[in-house]
Amino acid sequence: MAENTNSKPATGAFSSAVNGGMTVEECEKMINRSFRSPMVKFLKDQLEKSGCAIASNFIKAVHCNEEMSGGYSMGRGISVCSNHLQLQDEVTQVVIHELIHAYDQCRAANLDWTNCAHHACSEIRAGHLSGDCHYKRELLRGHMKLRAHEQDCVRRRVMKSVTANPFCSEAAAKDAMEAVWDVCYNDTKPFDRAP
Image 1 (tube, one colour):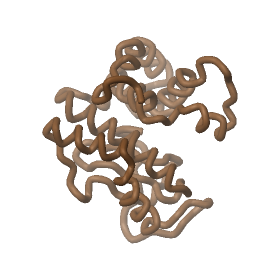
Image 2 (cartoon, helix red, strand yellow):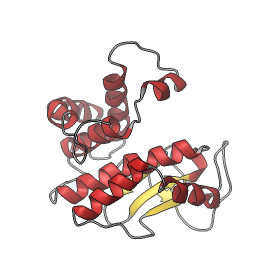
Image 3 (tube, rainbow, N blue to C red):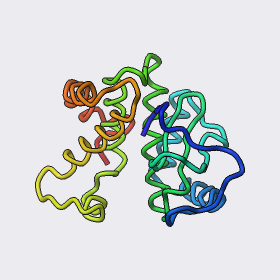
Image 4 (cartoon, rainbow, N blue to C red):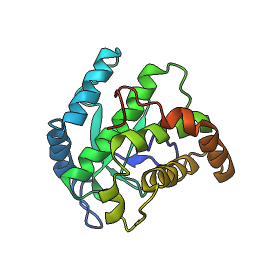
């Protein structure tokens, strides 16, 4: 999920695990382990090559009041919601998804997160390129479909994220997603092709 002014993580000393989640401290360790992932390494390298090196505090574990797994916010970096995650794979997946948003922000100086089409485009790219909608992940979520599961998953997740944007109604989010779908789904930068 990208820049979402409605869903702000609660920062501070609060770190107790909730609903099967983990503590902020446990999540910080998993964030550090995620830097060993080839995909995370690649995205960090691509951000640096694009002139947007990330500082050591760019990715933070936080306790989130909203039901979300993480978010990217321009100027603040990436928040990973410790209390809504349990596994290393989940943390790494959030980091990858949000790094794609950071890459989009870096390469497009005029990216406006209040613009539903801009937000939808970055969500389409992050959903498609991060592996969020891999067949196995969808199966674990209880979404069983043999054909077009990946695109259906990306559409579902784009709508969830963009409708959470206070500047985008459900109708505006759907219209924006449909308007930019082909261009954004087929834009695989910084990868040569969709991983």
